[in-house]
Length: 51
Image (tube, rainbow, N blue to C red; front, side, top):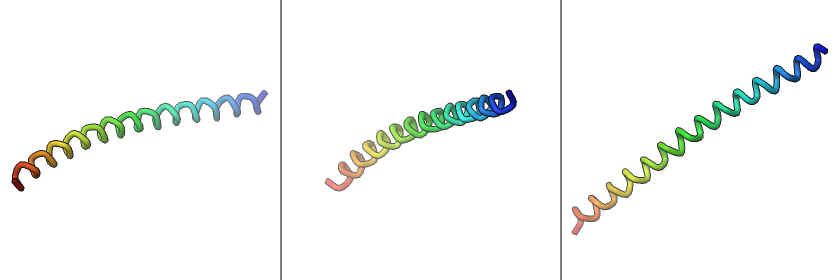
């Protein structure tokens, strides 16, 4: 009984950790997309300045 409870606790903790990692990944994906857009804008401005 105790062993099963321990396994269930470990599974619960691992699921919580996976949820946190997935949220972090979503945040990183959002930040990456924003940085891509900023980079595109900067490249466009630099291109206009060097003409």
